[in-house]
Image (cartoon, rainbow, N blue to C red; front, side):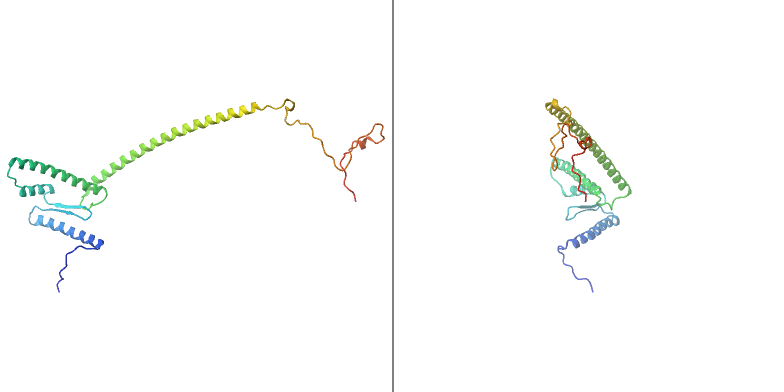
Length: 229
């Protein structure tokens, strides 16, 4: 049994739609290449994906084929107008080709669409990336050096301010000490008048004149001895 007729309509599933686009795009590019080789035909193919990515094939170069197409389709009657139009068209074509080349280069730098590139083109791309990386490192080192200089100047300024504040504190402390001198009668703070002592539990013994109490009793301490059991 043969395959049934497939209804052509938009694939709703996003993943299936992307897979189908990839397969059929590759098949279409392959068919265009085979047609140009087998039949010696000048073939140009341009494909834009739903995301805006460009896929193209030109057996004789896309710009050359487009110019040939315009010459075949556009036949104005006025020669001067034709020359002017042709000049503008050539300019637009060059700008378009340059724009497309820049887009391809940008995609290559982002790591996209690297499959068609040969070894030499990949080496050139690697050199471009290394050069860009070296420039980025130099810029970063320059900026870090400037930041270090700014931080050093700021720390030096803050250190000078701290020294100034410490000097003001020292001057203030010296002024306060000079404003409150010690009293002349108490030049030495440790030399103070003895305070009266409260004695509880016994009378202070004072030996009267002519008393017969031995001197040893007068020299005894006034503390009460403990009870002896």
